Image (cartoon, rainbow, N blue to C red; front, side, top):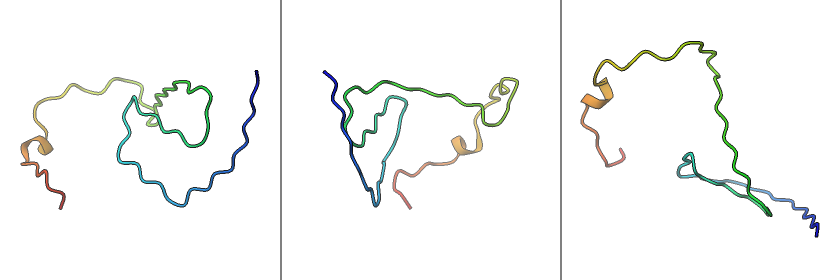
Length: 68
């Protein structure tokens, strides 16, 4: 059985709180959601990053859980 669905969706504003590697954002109708994962080298790097040498400046700062 083949079902064709045609939709027109107008989104004025969408707020996404967070996206992780396993997140799914679906707008509209989908019979099957196929997983898709893409990794891009947009910086054109050809060698691995150097190993970490210790704590970073951010790790040394006190982190506030209250948004400012």
